[in-house]
Image 1 (cartoon, one colour):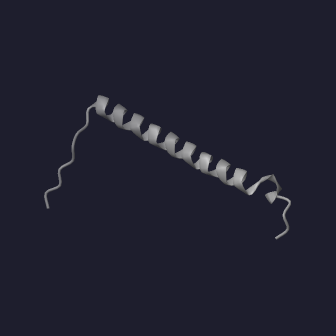
Image 2 (cartoon, helix red, strand yellow):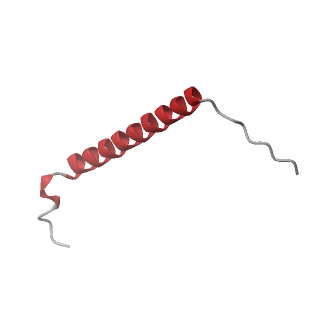
Length: 51
């Protein structure tokens, strides 16, 4: 097979990096939101509950 790789300009590399950072931040916020909602639904007493 003949594999060709695209050569990106500096502007395209910066744009890709910016999108990657934005996606990572969005994912982290979503995970934190799910965690907070889970803790809120279980209640504060979940830590003191016996196994």
